Image 1: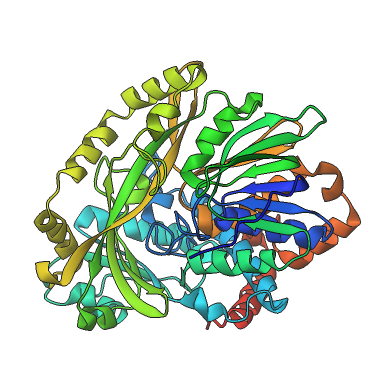
Image 2: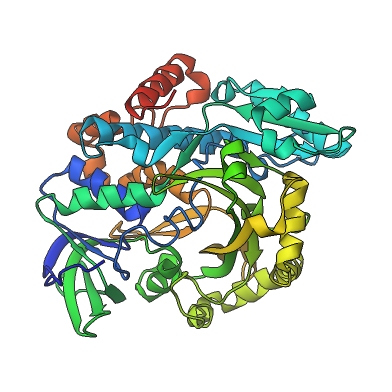
Amino acid sequence: MTHPIKPLVQETDVTLIGAGIMSATLGIILKELNPDLTIQIFEQLDRAGTESSDAWNNAGTGHAAFCELNYTPIKADGSVDISKASRICQDFETSKEFWAYLVQKNYISDPAKFIRQVPHMSFVWGKDNVQYLKKRYDAMHQNILFNGMNYTEDADLINQWAPLIMKNRKSKEFLAATNMEIGTDVNFGELTRQMIAKLEGMPGVTVHYNIEVEDIDPHKKGGWLVETKSMLTKKKADCRTKFVFIGAGGATLHLLKDAEIKERKGYGGFPVSGMWLKCNNEELIQMHNAKVYGKAAVGSPPMSVPHVDTRMIDGKKELLFGPFAGFSMRFLKSGSQMDLAKSLRVDNLLPMISAGLRNVPLTKYLIEQVKLSHEDRVKTLQEYVPIAKLQDWELLRAGQRVQVIKKDEGVKGKLEFGTEAIVSSDGSVAALLGASPGASTAAAIMLGILPRCFPKESKSDAWKSKLHEIAPSFGVDLTKQEQQLQQSRMRTAKLLNLS
């Protein structure tokens, strides 16, 4: 895709680095709160939403915590902790409210292009796993966020929900599944591109493609000096901004380390690549209509929870299985093998070494995953799809994820699986690190940083009123507001064309 080269706007109120789901979400919200704001967006590639936001990479499931077993760990006393699942589910409700707002404002014309209803299922086998899933269901069933979740150990009912995973399965196996009909499939790449296109048409917004941000330094007149380089002409240019948001996926860490704010110290990143098995058999694709999540292998990272995943991509129904984890030095799918080395600094070297030593089983697991053959991966798939054949599936490279490493107890480092927003003490710089469930909770994350970055404005009646219009349930504990939850889900389902 060819975009005209635009001259840099020399001074703006806001600079957004990276044209992914996070920058698109924050850009729209800020323009709704203050239409007079000037915004400049820099994207290194020639298209918005093509790294982790893209449907072929990592994003796809609308992470509402209905089916992802890694969000509901077992506690020391043997009970199941659903607190993280509850938070994620509420955040996803906020995202749906935000997207419904976009549709209501005619910023997005056809929600079916990015979201559709696909049931979310958890599926396990083996006596211990069945006991775990029953405990999980019992705990979640008491939370109104998960009203409508069904549990069964009946193979015939599981077959009705997902016939593909039951065909030719051994009849004497211990099986269990949960099913949530209101689950969704979200094409975050398509959503991002529609939002960026809307931003491009707004007064005071300039979007640049094929532009790399090389550095962020304090400007002598206040604010920040953003140093850029054209990927096409190699010419360098600078501009000044009052506020910077770094939402560049894996590249965020490099820019955060370059920004001269004390909050950057101690942070590192651990890159994990991913691969999908993509189905090429149309009969199998049409047989399945669900996102079926299982239990991750012992020692595997949480984002490697295997799932048989129905997706709608570019108007076509697809079927993926995975992701299989791998290791790469790159921080972006389009990045460099030197990315990991370049991220090392004096302030994060010891935490990164410490995190590595504390996560030896993870390293071993990644090495084992890299060594898998195509036949090995299909054997894993056959545990979920017994009728899977080698010739019906091809290996597809997914996106890169950079897991957060942060200081923990002095110089020790802790590996975090999730997303983390870092904001400077004066609120003029914000950055987002980490991975899943990032895209699904983008609206809640961006709304959450507003009081830290724009404290005065966030207290104004005008902003409060508009924020309530954008996301009425944000900041509300929906676990205690059943009527509001039902009203929100009915409203968003109607506007987003969901059942």
